[in-house]
Length: 335
Length: 265
Image 1 (cartoon, rainbow over the protein chains, first blue to last red):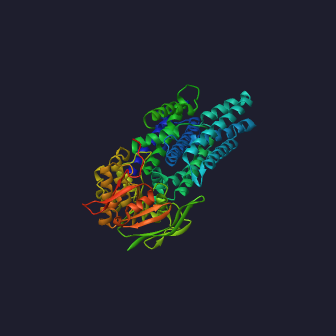
Image 2: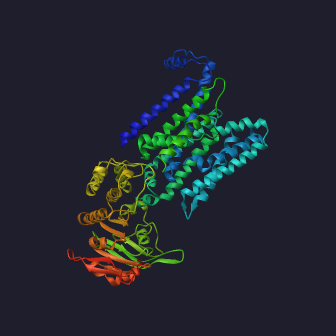
Image 3: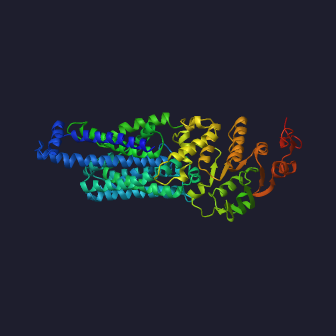
């Protein structure tokens, strides 16, 4: 078990590392990948790096932070997906179905329209409040007789999302064309706008929440079998669920507030990981952390370079991959 | 030696009493059957013994310790439960599921060790599920699944195993095989089993004692020979039945009879 876990972490960790390195090497600015690699080697041995200062700026203050944010967001979304699917015992659950996207979007768009524009503090804060408020509504609705009811929560999430869409449409119809581009970009996901301090904060939140989730991996295995079974096997189910919901909501809300709405990561990655590795969450959780990080870094790299002189929203790429996969899942996995 | 003590338990959902002053005790290594009509409070009683429901009045003690206020992880080392049916949303192998029985004995971050693998192997051998270890649980037949769940219960190393209609979804052969297996586990491993069932004949054949529950009250309690009688059954179920003695075993045998029933032809 320990050995297997170590192998999986090494394997998926190196997959992520490889994707990240590749992603640093390519981009809109024409910096030769060979030059970057050679520059790294030279720099390591104390030689004069071949990279020009402006190229160094592009690498260190644009590409690298963006990759770190993409990795953090991808990891947070896929971990949350694993946890929500397990707790709600529903293979189609993912953080966004529980209303987070809607809530965050309302917060962020309200912020853009009020005129905070591209403020790097106000927009994420509002998005975070919106996401948390939506989740709170879903939780309060889904809690019956001191228990979380999965079906009620999923339905509440659908309702909250629909209501939020209405608010978003309302806000958009009020807005002038100036705000529209910002809104669209936010709605489709954008990893390019966060600053260093925010990225560090997101990474910190992910580290803490992921630690909490990993510690509860074995109880999560038992909850998948049914809550009463988990109780019979010695788990304090309600307490475990509250802790897991809090940790996953926190990291998803942070991710959404910095990166906008990036769909399907929380759905595709957990299922692919389970298909490859089985259902033991002690393996699935760490594997999908790295897998999700690698996936979003790769998707964002494609978004950066797919169209010359333009940048696609990363949510478009994940949706192009995720939506067909969702249909495939519905056709083959869900009875 | 008595292991499970249920003392004057009263329980209600809302205003209606589901259990009224239920008291009984079960001895170590005994196979104890609880029988009664639908809605008589059988399953509620099991859920009180396993601590999921709290009685309004009265108490349950296992091996001299009251279960009220016990932590779930402590309780899970003493009581294991085999439900009617188990379904998994995500695929687990039979071996992984039996290993889950070790959960109450493991710390939060610890991995299972050689000792745990030994216990799991023994439990799977005892239930003849070892050849199924690598198979996916949802690919197994109903009878195989129930044996895997019993293996999981054994891996918990409990003092008591509670079974809630464990044979409800099984065919005749598997009903008998599973009940016989529980009986031999009680005898050989000195496990105590309390089973809720609708099958009076099966229970008479394998249980040491039976308790008839009706309307939340204990109507009869004793060895099958003494309590499985026409009088008791007519009183509890309100239908005419015929009870005779199986010559091979000397145990009571219940048959339906059309006497006093109006059967449209």
